[in-house]
Amino acid sequence: MNASERLVVELRRRIHEVSPKEALSLQARGAALVDVRESDEIAQGTVPGALALGRGFLELRIEEAVPDLGRAIVAMCSTGLRSLFAAENLMRLGYETVYSMAGGFSRWKADGLPVEVPFALGGPARERYARQLVMAEVGEVGQARLLRSKVLLVGAGGLGSPAAYYLTAAGVGTLGLVDHDVVERSNLQRQILHTDARVGNSKVASARQALEALNPTVKIVGYETRLSSANVEQILAGYDVVIDGSDNFPTRYLVNDACVKMGVPNVHGAVYRFEGQVSVFWPGKSPRAGPCYRCLFPEPPSMEEAPSCTEAGVLGVLPGVIGLLQATETIKLLLEIGEPLVGRMLYFDALQGSFSELALERDPGCRYCGDGCSFPGYIDYERFCGRPAE
Amino acid sequence: MNVLIPAPLRSYSRHRRVEAVGSSLAEVLADLDRQFPGIRFRMINEQERMRPHIRFFVNGAQTFDLSLRLRATDELVIVQALSGG
Image (cartoon, rainbow over all chains, first blue to last red; front, top):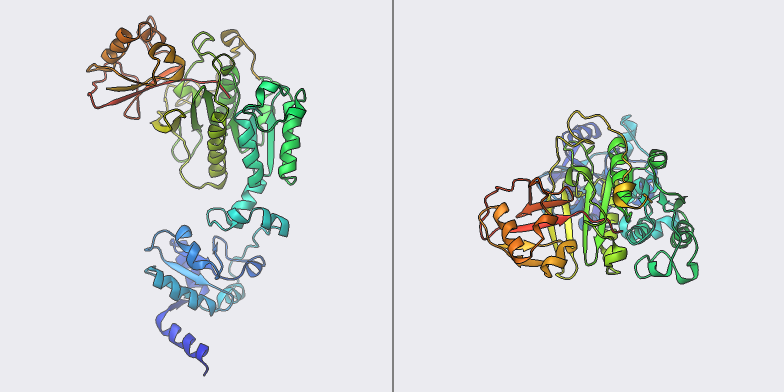
């Protein structure tokens, strides 16, 4: 018996081995099934719900994937050998209950247990998204989810620019852009999708050029139109998340009302001078519904009560900060990771360099998302706010 | 207590963070109006109701109650709906 064989015998004395059927049962009871095979092996098929961490980076990735040292872990490889070594290291890291699956994935398949073939990224995509693929919260499964996702950006301006750039970079599969406007030179201080050479071009066309240059694999769908009660549902249909980067109240209420009606999360951002607000309005969130925009602000202010950035100005980098927080919230929603800003608002004060976190209450009497209410229809606010929705 | 004034009302207070006194939200708003005449009407309408685009948060929690008792150590954040994008 050579040294490695002696080591395996020794490991088998210390590591509790389970059969694939026992592993399946443990997984059903909450154990983490960790696949320690190489990515090319995993690409051929794995156990549904398994954490594909691989052997090479196992010790570096496991704490992110399984932060609770008390959670049981079943290590799995191809034949049940590498999983023994992996299990020993997991125990040395402090995991209290660790098993190795005897016979590995080969025996799992032979026993007729469920198998899934994970989404496989091509070489260029693997290289492009490498820095987020290594994070267990994203990984190949999360990247596949991003690539299948559809996000609608209302407004290709100050907030929409950074959000669109980073979502495109992250590989969100389809990005819809709604904007009827053209690029003006006064936009360029903050609307970084656009360039001096594209002044006079439609914002949607300008944005498409910038985004396709960054990541040609993302599908950009342009809507060069004003958002209105007549087209809002048709445009929003099929999108997983809507980002409100509009610059006027009529559009903000239209976006809110349509998102409530269609059950889509509304990632809200708004800026003014040196201050900005971010929240996720999502009354349809399960299991705990959040407020909608109208729960917070039931009606828009008049023009006199709320001057626009055109009149009051805005620090150019401010929509950068807020738009990126919107992009961050969007990715969290798409991947179902972290704690989204549902029922919370971040209030950013650039001059103070501070964020305030405010708890938002859902209004059970809200006319749009309140208990037992039926959708009351869209409201035309042009006469209140003095300008049409865009 | 510390009161944070939203940017659209800064033409009254000049400062983001101001001091105001009062043992209830209504009293604090009255004190703000003494210091910065006219600011209260931008937040509370003729019917003594909060304007729908203005909201009040005491220590991060939303309140709709003008009679809410406050302590000197509390922080009041006033939030206004913003449209800029």
